[in-house]
Length: 300
Image 1 (cartoon, rainbow, N blue to C red):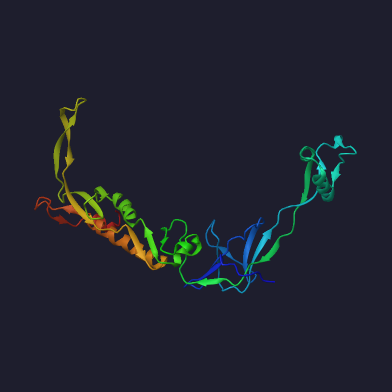
Image 2 (image 1 turned 180 degrees about the vertical axis):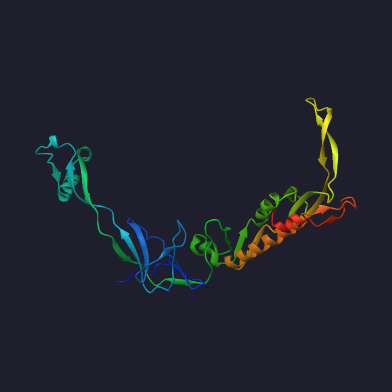
């Protein structure tokens, strides 16, 4: 017998031929889940902790293999020497229920202190899930480590996270993501967001050495901050400033499209910042630049 349709269960048909099923545990289910099955074949959990399960087919029958808890088959007196007519060595489940039903609260508490339960493991049971399963159009939902998705959908659907990625929305944090990568690059002196009154985006300062290294004398400082006679030669650097109008979010009709745009824009802005990894031209006093061959080695 098939239960009534459960509209918390969904399926996604992926372009690679796989099917993802969102199969949360039924309300009130206390049994431990062993595995999910599609037409008798074991499904693969899509990622740890999620309710998404993957299979290579559109299933006609979905079942859950469940492990019931141990069955209580009686209660045994904790201290065998304390056996008496009132407190026998063992109580059957029926005797236990009868004493619980007629005894006072104090008497019930005494029973729990004197007796420990006897149990035995039960065989796993296979439970057929409600059907039909509604099929949605969309890509894989965000997994661990993927950019998050903020969907634009009616408030009445806001508490249905299993299919948010199928609605229009945005991936927040592109500018912060690019900023963190730019800050880790060689020669980057600063990278910050525009302040009030400035265009949104990233403001980057890169200090690069000259093609033919230049240096200047810099005296050491004493304890009181005074210049000392000793010192050292330090490199002279030329500063290049850039404005990168990186958007704060990536907006798209679906999570899949936004994720593709996220990776494209990240690569685009990082390439621009990396292209500024050049050496200053000695001939024009640092106003021009020459190619820094080291950047072609791939190191930021």
